[in-house]
Amino acid sequence: MNIGLTGGIATGKSTVSALLVAKGALLIDADAIAREVMLPGHPVLAAVIQHFGQAIVNNDGTLHRKKLADIVFGDPVQRQALNDITHPAIREEMRLRMEAYEREQPDKLVLADIPLMYESGLENLYEEIMVVYVPRDVQLRRLMLRDGLTEEQAELRLSAQMDIEQKKSLADIVIDNSGTQAKTKRQIDQFWQRKGLA
Ligand SMILES: CC(C)(COP(=O)(O)OP(=O)(O)OC[C@H]1O[C@@H](n2cnc3c(N)ncnc32)[C@H](O)[C@@H]1O)[C@@H](O)C(=O)NCCC(=O)NCCS
Ligand SMILES: Nc1ncnc2c1ncn2[C@@H]1O[C@H](COP(=O)(O)OP(=O)(O)OP(=O)(O)O)[C@@H](O)[C@H]1O
Image 1 (cartoon, rainbow, N blue to C red):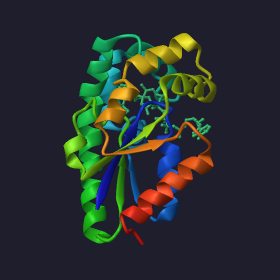
Image 2: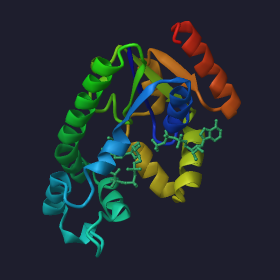
Image 3: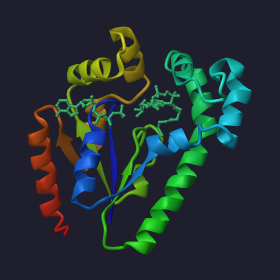
């Protein structure tokens, strides 16, 4: 079986996916694939540079992630341009990995971690969608703390995504990660049991 995992930025998707992987789930991570297609030599990075210019590249040819982030999180038109370049390649790679896992290990739970699941309309590709939820004020605080962002920068990133309350209302399964990590783990254990997973 498969599950699509999503939530807002810094609500705890990685925390939850690590708990599920520890129980035996197979993970496909959209953020990790997004980083792979931005490595030097990849045609997606070349297309991104073509659009945004050399200013977003470090001297060693790697992507200057902060510079690109400053451009796209402040400007919906540029963000859409970046999405149009990167998302088809990310989606195709996700599809290939999903097919391989389901073919080679059909008894396992496959977990597709996709931050922009609803924004990109991918929710119908998965049997069920799990949303990792925290209230918006907790989300903002954790994001500022983890990424060393100002409140203004963190607000810009939040407003580049669908509101977390809306994602929660669309979810098949909600994991509330606003308490301790132990509390979150209990919800994952219960989910695992409910599904009768080995
Ligand atoms: C803009 C980039 C360079 C910023 O890099 P940075 O290291 O600061 O952030 P990182 O990649 O770790 O992303 C952190 C989170 O930001 C959010 N985010 C990233 N890209 C986007 C986007 N285009 N729109 C809305 N939110 C986004 C997601 O919640 C993601 O989990 C990078 O996010 C990127 O290449 N984005 C385009 C690809 C993409 O859409 N990735 C996210 C989903 S696959
Ligand atoms: N239950 C919790 N209590 C306190 N802090 C937490 C909890 N869960 C996660 N965190 C912290 O909150 C931050 C965000 O968590 P995490 O990186 O798992 O989110 P994410 O949804 O994967 O983020 P992103 O999509 O931005 O990569 C991290 O610094 C993490 O250590």
